[in-house]
Length: 530
Image 1 (cartoon, rainbow, N blue to C red):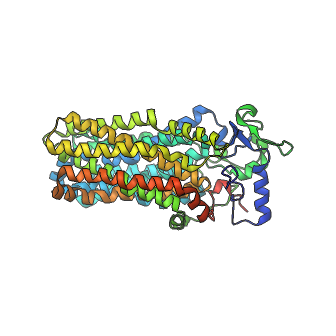
Image 2 (image 1 turned 90 degrees about the vertical axis):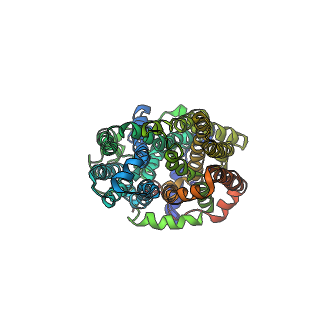
Image 3 (image 1 turned 120 degrees about the horizontal axis):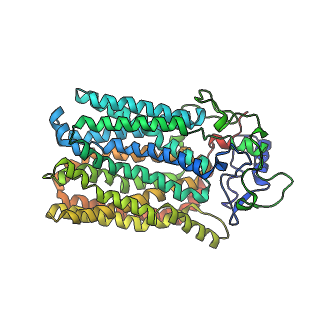
């Protein structure tokens, strides 16, 4: 199948043939390209189109999205340095205190199934604000909880409230940026979740010096700041793209051929080209379905989640990554206090710096931007056709770094090596996780760009389900196997389990996608309402 044309006939498979041909004609004539390759999404000439907003506005919104996604994991791990205080306060075992990290992850896993369809109906902005209000209230509840049960309930709703940062956050990125920019922007988005996991314990170590409750109070302050940013600087980005491509195409019907986006500019019309309320012209708090598109039912996110199992390229990539690679992050994070038991909570928090540096440098040096470069070069060699499997090349060095980091860290703890050895190991481990996460997210969205909300919901559920499950077994596993073999086994699973799955996807991915066909639904922005 020609990947450049794959998005034309599949825009709305449930519509009749005449409607499909009309929509294909709108996008097919006068198509916009960059460097000779068709861009996705196709831009309109409408200044209210998020693709046409200024770089400053788009990156300001990207910052808010990443801040939300950063809080997504910050609240999960910020309590790690206070494990000892939580044990004493609620009379818990170490395994039970590990569950305080697992419960927010359960909220994060459930949240995408709740929020995704609502964000496709009422828009991204309202869902972000609602979720942040929920997380803000739950964080205050966690700070004041007198008993373990109340504390765990508050932690669950923290995760549930901040979970729009996952699926809805990536939807915002897809609303504003083209596919040739996706690797870098998704890399920054992934950097937010991975750095949040690691900055949380560092901040928590300092805040625990005051009290364990202050860890939650500081998180409440951050949620308050995030809420103000969302209200003041985050307009609606859900845009009725197919409808507006008919009203305000970037290239007119009289034009022929392909047009380079860098040459024709991005604003050839005025906002008055259509009287349809959209993006910045919607009400300040939009409580009605965003007009100009067909909306899913509120429960469709659950149905589509189940139906995504049919698309094996997505299912294999996500399940393989989550359960043979990513979930070892929680092994390291939850066991680090036990590994360095003789250090104070403040020092234990500082020992996450190696993880943080590995995450940051991996994104700067070998993350999303390099992924975009590799895909662009391979596409030129492939006659200008982008293939999703081109994203997977970076997974191999990433998996190797993760495996080495896990093995060396387990040995360094077991043998009592200098803490710096452990920091180098954690640096390598985190670098591999960061790159691997960027690769998988970019791959599944490239594979099904018209169903990006559904595939990212699938990813977010299993990513956080793996984070939820890991703390329940890692402490007993370490106790029975010892530090060396517990973490060496994890490294071996990454190298000999996850990487062969990636290799199989790279070889057979195109065949699998052709055989499974197109989904029977699309994101609402690509679906004209009746």
